[in-house]
Image (cartoon, rainbow, N blue to C red; front, side, top):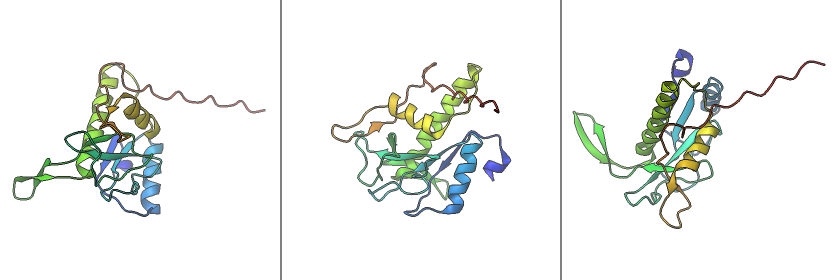
Length: 178
């Protein structure tokens, strides 16, 4: 629905499965092809990155604890460029109440929100917005800070100052017909 409707720059998905779904993979590719960046929860089984976060057209989001150490439950893998707050997060629940919750689904909105702030910064500077999942992974990885020693993960705190957002990709020239 969001892809067909248009006018959006990002999708935040808090869902996952250990196996690839062809329909969701096709939707992720369609979104990517339209310049929409998808953020998805990496998973909560402590193993490899779940789908759709493992899809190359998606930015996988892992979770860290209050000491900036990767959460024991957080799925891992090369698809996860950085980890975000995901333990003991205050979340709205039915009945107009709040509860503490933990999971990569709690971390994913942090990453998507950071990206949204970057989009606003680009718009304010009059720059174009098309950004790929690869560019976002590189930005998060390059501008985030080192996490807990021995973790091997970067903590999601990308630099949102002017000039820190990754440049829009330059289109490849179209070859002349011969």
